Length: 154
Image (cartoon, rainbow, N blue to C red):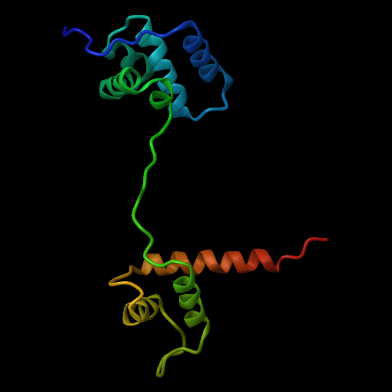
């Protein structure tokens, strides 16, 4: 069995904080699992023992250990930001898309389709390309916003 490269040594205050995270029930399941990983790793258990006890992979245990040793407790417990893809349309462009969708359909059509709207976005050079799903989501989001503003509370 290989030696543990990153040894977890918790202070009393860290151990107390991790126990609270694990018991309180207000944290995400992932955060609770990470707290339990650190607590068990501090008890001297090997990665495979911690993993089998918590029903997670040994690589997850290794990542949590590494992050704790290299970056500290907060980094080991909390999720990193997931930036995602840049938005295709923003602000005025989205509003313009909605305005087009609300206008009269093109000649020879009874209504706007997602494909027609996507083609119009490309034609107007708002984006090089845009998926039908993105157009659908923009329209859905804007429609919900309008409906929420229209609701009158007594």
